[in-house]
Length: 167
Image 1 (tube, helix red, strand yellow):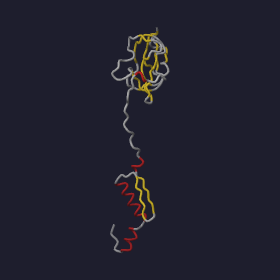
Image 2 (cartoon, helix red, strand yellow):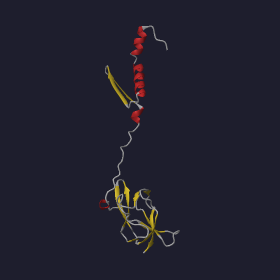
Image 3 (cartoon, helix red, strand yellow):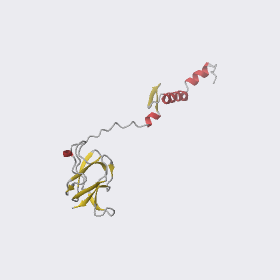
Image 4 (cartoon, helix red, strand yellow):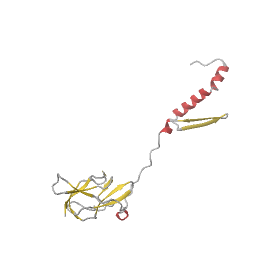
């Protein structure tokens, strides 16, 4: 594009509001600005860039495992359900969706292990949901045969936690 020789044309183009706005938009895009707010000669211009539409990443989350004694005692009991393909065994199911833990805190021994005999209302695991750690008591007494749920993994309500031989 050739430069205009006529000074009047150059001045009118430089003072043209649409040219000014275009240049401001170019600045916002070129510098990846979230927003540009400018007031000149009684005219206020506000331009929001693409960076304004992108949400800031959430802050890092730190998981803190509370000691067993401070766990919420609000979780319903693990539901016991008879299982057809495991003759005579009963599945204790997760009463809620969350992260399954076999122990009350990292480094602690598991609440129960395969071969252990459990009683009704004995804590068999902890499920964390929305930063609340809930002890899960057994609904049935018996001998633990097999753990199905994996420590530190998501478990859904109704998923089997373990299979027991009823007492």
